[in-house]
Length: 532
Image (cartoon, rainbow, N blue to C red):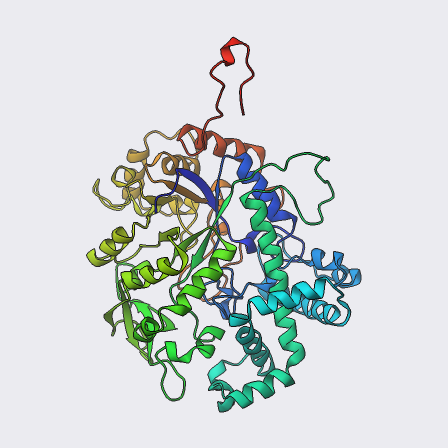
């Protein structure tokens, strides 16, 4: 699918400013949407929205269907009476520029659990009716997810295959007894999902079109038309799911597991330029033959759920749909693996039959072979081009702008890369010479020079991490692959985005055709008013 020529920013919601230590779905994302619209942007790319587990990575979620309760806007719940004002007054003093996940999780979990209990005891129609309707409409994933989380809580967070056998293997009588025994906790997790999706879907409606905010103090004047924002949200579907997830626990037949419910094969990538031993991700591998027999129903439901929350999907590790690296479980590295054919076009044919043509971006970075390119091009998915990869060789470099193709997405860097300022500072002299020669005499800082280069590319879409717009060094880096801790924590502060950032992005968007110039009436020169 081709996309209209446009531009946007990459920012995960956890990086938004806010007083409770992590980005929330309150005023901050609405102000961000306003900024993007005023800056001539029409895209906001995020990372996966699922509830995070060990390591706080959005790519290792407890569910491919659920939302992250840490993003719930607490003031919204207080306004509805689910949180007492005193509960929020006791909030710790959190840092403004990073997420300190441990204290944030402890504080927000306690407050949200209390809110769920208050809602359960006091909610009246129509609020309870709306909650019950949400639970019924989402029962195909919510029932399993809420029980999974309740059981994890009851087992002190232990991995599901270490629970009592009758629970780990999902014996019906054991599950029924657990659901009754843990009824209050199950209710809490359903409530958290209800509130997350209420708040996120309100934000998405605003981003896509309307100018109506929940609980905003200033209301539009009577009769005034809400202004259109026109911001499309790009989401992210990781190809694999975490072993310790409701997805694997509830659908054990879809994964390679042994009799003790342990993975027999796990995912990774082979040794390459970046790692002599490859990358051992450890995710359980799909039984694609079983998925095919079921008409890829799980994937269809996964995509349908994701498109509730986003408008475009970036499909992570796209090459794994052509062929994936299979490593026997227990191997210390990813060296001793082999390539196994993925589902190929059959999966996407099933998705198209069920859901129609889907707006998908293929994350095609890494070792890309001819079969991967053929699948991407057959499906007409745009691939990704990263400017930070462009200056390591000669003029034939795939990532250099003069080698780009329109049906692509250009980035200065991604969430896994250094910031542009940090990247440039860490380059060896030879690469810096190539960068300087290609960009020409720099009349602006390197981050703006690289953003300008991305915008002038022929690629249909241009996406820039907000850290690059702000000109941050590597203190603003979101993730360092292979680093065991300290990732995913960067936040920007209220007031960091200034009019000069907006004006520069708008200038670039207009100059390089990523926003249409205002149209003027043909008769404007004869006294007619120009049209907007």
